[in-house]
Length: 440
Image (cartoon, rainbow, N blue to C red):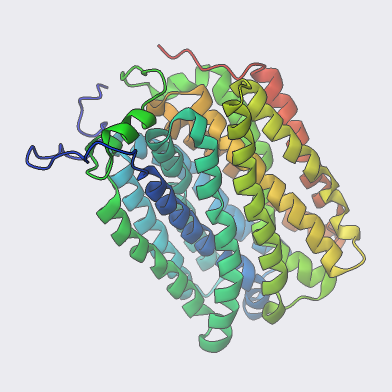
């Protein structure tokens, strides 16, 4: 398929001749406005995703779920998210970021609000599936936008910034959701948070264009954005990506580590309730602490690899060093269930959450290290599919393990602690030098 196909190009309509480009002079910095939009979208994405986890102990009592039922409900999100990643990656590569991201956020916002009308475990499973399909567009869209708006040496830092929105969303949700649920009922918690996506959409449509077509980007900034070597423009067949070991390295990295982050999102309120008696009214502070610390890891982790590369390290050495550090920091997570107090457990999980976000910012960036911009969203989509399918298996297993062991989390946290070291070892064996895939 040629990039002359209007469904493939990511450019907005050509700027009319009467509208001059931004004046020459000091380099504009509009790319950071785009990064801020991506940060806001990711924040909303995680607010919508976390509402059910915060309300889970309350809804479990009201509706009568078992641990296995809850694991199955959240696994439907992961299953739909996995399928959606495959489709959304291609939609974004074909439609472009502006239209593709708009479609995604409208879809997931409507699904988030739809939870308010569920009354059974089956109803929540359907709503979670719809939410997963829509939310699958966020990260392929954000990574593709970052690849289009930032040179390679800045991408990890920009990814770290927008990825920090996942932690901000995880902080805002426990502030908003208990307050709304306790004052107006749990249904309004889903409706109010779901409506945030439409506010973001208005800003997105007003502010987003491709760099070449944006009136607020001057020639100096455009040259900076396009300072990497020129890439071919021919289309890449989706199935051909599966023939490259770089795809499988990213696939395994996501498959083994994404489920751990989702475990934190969906099961932490239940873990705190089961081990320390933390109820809905008291869950906000522990979760805020955990995800506030995680924000530091997201931005700091992206900064580390970008700084090492700017100082002359190879991309391979910089990225893998920045992956090794969090992988080692996460190992002590296995001791969280044995903590003697709530705040010791919170401290252990806080370090693990920060290290995961450090890891995630750099893992996402390896996709744009190994593949050209025209294939990035598709590769991220494949990796997202892998991570989500890993989540399906881990969530269903978690519910059944907890039922069999009477809410003993020891085995689950052991898996959490060892997953990242295992993932990095496998990635290194598959791509020892993190070299770009030869697609043409």
